[in-house]
Length: 348
Image 1 (cartoon, helix red, strand yellow):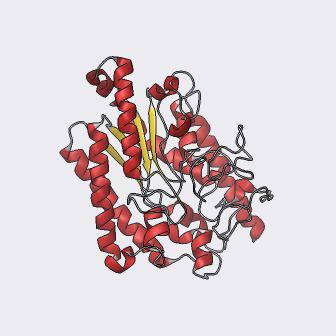
Image 2: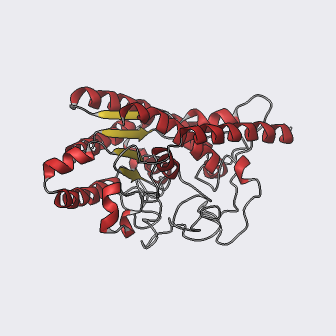
């Protein structure tokens, strides 16, 4: 049965590889710049020099990435790395923390591991750059772009043609709501109320980005956070059995995020907020009848569910659903990237 499971998973991976190949555009990039906001799912090094446990600039992270460990929370490419390839960029989008003036016109990555929509989210790990601060950083960059292009009108016109990707919200549950020993949000709010609070703040953030020139914005919904190896281990669940309370909370958030995207498109002129439903991607691999897909990471992890430094990882990385205790595998990232690119393609 295990061999059958691996065979079917390999077929899926090969399909994604083929799909990705046909999506790749060579030559001039399809958008002038690409800006990324969010958390560890898309962080590519902004946390490296922060006083935090949420940084991964060590092996086995990056073992399959050309530059080695960079601060990406995977063995290889992040979803936005793959999207940048689809868009035709020659290089991956650089992290805000180390970007040079010559790079900012092609976009920046502001994402920060453990960050969330709420400012306090993830501070149990140490310092992070929360979503509000990421937008403040982008505000500074847009001012610099206006200086380079000559004026704000030219900058706004330029930025309106760029793509923006936002992947945030998971930590507001994993490293906030479902951590009552550190945070009081689960005592103050029901899951429905908490989703409303998060979306209200998210709405303000998106309106701020709109005023800064953003027009084409992909909003990735939450993955099933109750199906991560960390969640199933923390709640003492058997393999392939997810934590319903966490997944239900994520579902409530996703419903509201989808509605928010629709509402903003109605209210804001020329806005193209694109909601991306990725919730079912890992679930389809854990619920195929008779396959018994195990929920486990590819690397051996610490008590914080990140890979143990310099420890060997599994050999069949291409067949894994998860890389560490939190993050999906590169195979899942390729599926997410393909969905994102296909969704934004009509608008770029």
